Length: 342
Image (cartoon, rainbow, N blue to C red):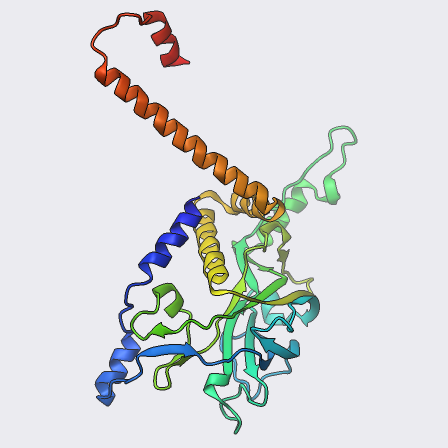
């Protein structure tokens, strides 16, 4: 209930006019020209033909001029069209670079959605700024290194996995870093399909922060959102010196604006709660949301709301009764004490 209420309140508050960004103000001050565009609309029409590419790099910034071939690519996709079904899970094998094994760098997925007939490389002659939507998503998560513990069977007297007390202590001493990289292994790509026409100063802040806007032409690009909602911490793969190949499962779908905002709000809320209560507790919440039927979740929410309402009405009637009561006639002191403690 708290997640749904927070999303509704943020949507209502987001209708207020968003202040211009620092870059926008600086550009206006230096050029002395204020854009005459009053509204922003989607740069891509319905049934726009495009292709989706995923590049994997150790750097958070990628130059397409000298970039290696994409690790995954899908052509012939249609934007906001029922004729373009979602792409099911596809596995891609990625060679682990030596710098990643030494815990010196990370790996990033550079995702490009490019209109057919154009190029994502700014140096190419057929490059169009409104034909390329891109984002970067980390594929490695840094978590605390798990200490090796020696476990001994009481009946047989043997150590589990042949890890003795001395071997466990030696492994823990070799861990020179408290944080260890873990491979996520799941890349869920979502392209937001929405054709809302926003006023230039009326874009909700949570939407404006993710939009790539061309204010001169009054257009914005579709948002690419990568969700880690269903990436559980116990499914992460530790990366060490013995790791050679990494398997990446790629999926793609197109979602609505409301679903994107709701998923992003829930993901941000779960990450905040994980920092307070731990990752394991939030993994249990994710499993509950993923494994439980939506009808059962809705029924549980309805029963919770009714239960809260009845508790409030009962408390209200108790206050009203004692406020209007002038004597203790007909009331049992023993019953009152029993109800007070039980």
